[in-house]
Image (cartoon, rainbow, N blue to C red; front, top):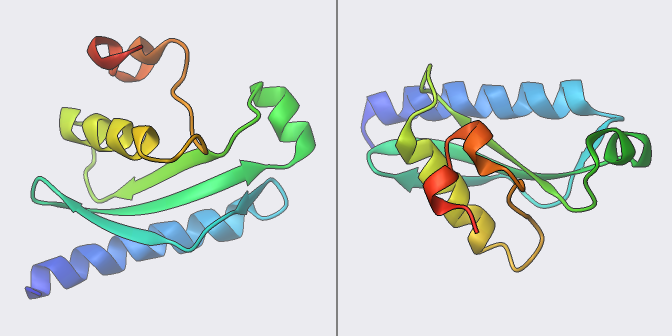
Length: 109
């Protein structure tokens, strides 16, 4: 692994740890953190389940994907990776009804 990759992993890993810490009591991380390499990017993947009051507030009943990356803007490849993870989640995750809001409009069901 190149040293640049390690620096990115460290930064993304820190983001994942900060999310876990700040989300405590609001979201439960439901499976071990995972790393994905996709189109020259390194991503941290977390599945989280909101506690009941947050589920009602967000109107969700499934887990939520938290995707951490070192990119400073939302790129099409990040959206595509999210869609791929959601589609392969065996029903644990579900796409938003209006995916155009986050750039996935052409892939919406």
